[in-house]
Amino acid sequence: MRRCSLSFLLVTAAISIAASGCMEAPGKPKANTEPSRPDRILDAKTLYKQNCAACHGDQGHNGVAISLANPVYVATAGVDNIRKVIAKGVPGTMMPAFSKGGGGLLTDEQIDALANGIVDAWSGPAALAGQTPLAYASASTGDVGRGEQAFAVYCARCHGADGSGNRASPSQSNPAQSLGSIVDPAYLALVSVQGLRSIVIAGRPDLGMPDWRSYLEGMRARAMSDQEVTDVVAWVASHRTMTPGQPYPK
Image: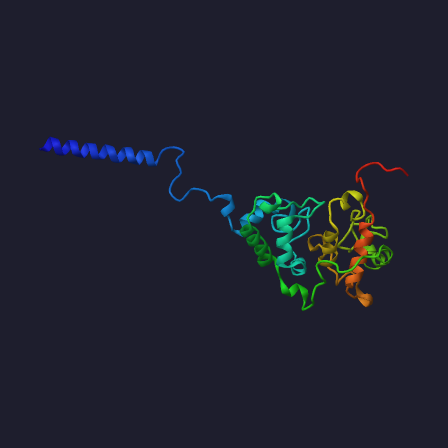
């Protein structure tokens, strides 16, 4: 009887060890460690890091694309426009469509989570000081001639009279020193008309560029009107060329 009991215990122990060995087999996922499917990720921070940070910056600014960590931009665009841009992209620019319907990899639920996450993280009503921002999209056509005049009033002190840049001395107090050209065809080939409008309205605080309310100082201080913004954008966009980067006949 003792031999039978001992044999039974040994067999039971062997089975337990074998089962434990299978559960701990090299390469076998452990319980609760299997990664989520990419289309089930709904965490806004994760989605932003995977899809947006490379162009817009890890913290929403200091990237090659427009700063998203700008409460004036967020208030101007609103969640619906942000969602639309994420889903459909911006044709003619480096901003692709991220929705599956547009050829991207994100579901509608992920796009909603990402757009709402951007608004939740970087909205700030206090930045508007109770003022209503200008409309995200223009409702009128810009006039290039008027735009040149408005540019001279609001923008030339930083960007130069012809938009080709201000080579200010680093010792000067101007926060927008040694700026490059904003009428360079290569730059204009990468930014949409809507992008230009958003930058004029919301500014680029990460680069020291103010918003539409703060281009004039002192006794002349006043905000740009919607039409003035539209006209300035038309003048800047008029410097586009059909084949940027190619040599041009003089």
